[in-house]
Image (tube, rainbow, N blue to C red; front, side, top):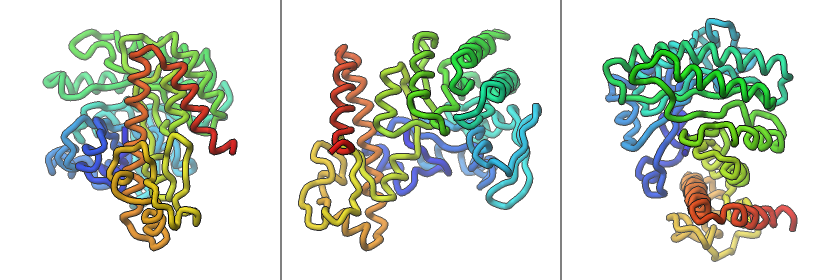
Length: 355
């Protein structure tokens, strides 16, 4: 799921995204709240019309962005007080406000407000944040049900499981989230998906993979599983192997703007002088506009000349690469060959590192 933090996937237009096969885009609650404001987006027709994207949209809760503000925010049971990075004003974000903002923005999928802690947080602090996330989930659910009473199909609310790298906390978070979804009955009882948050925030990769492996056998099989903030190719393939269905990350466009491109043979840096006279496509196996039109030598020239087209073309390729990778993983699952396919893919992907 490409990330359009401020209602735009950087360097790419909606037609670019449709052209590479994107079926869903993420936008950021925190950023759109502070600029231009959810009321402005609503007045301009809602988030879909605002950013000219007709396919599904997901807005995250703002919890991760508030977490990343570090010294500029204060967490309490009521919510979070933070200083806007745009105008310096002090603002408050509560579970109820996070739901209201996302409802006003008009996303198809909204995320419940959560308390995110760094990946190396100890058990006591991770337990406190996970428990608070569950209490906030009940408040998010109640406010969402109030808003959705007259339009139950307008938006879906998804809970986020926290708990750091501790299996007991993740298990408790799952049990609490399922209980919160079943409470109260009505049209919006239960959840239509579950999200796993608080990973890829500083913990070693083996610990992230261990958490996902542990959760794989506990998560209800009928609910889609969304792994938040993970999008490097090797991490994505590893997460699919542990039962995840959906992921998002700024990595493909950020890496592209910095001159790095994903390929099955690993990541290449197009700024490298060795590509100056290279007539080959960026990735011969890729069907995107970048790879079917331009040479590596031309792409290197764009970056050397600081031409904006280079940022777009590599971003376009990286998004297409991950979408193709997801399709290949899905096909391997359907054919019952995922384990062998993923091992072979990972060995090839890492071969450049080992060379």
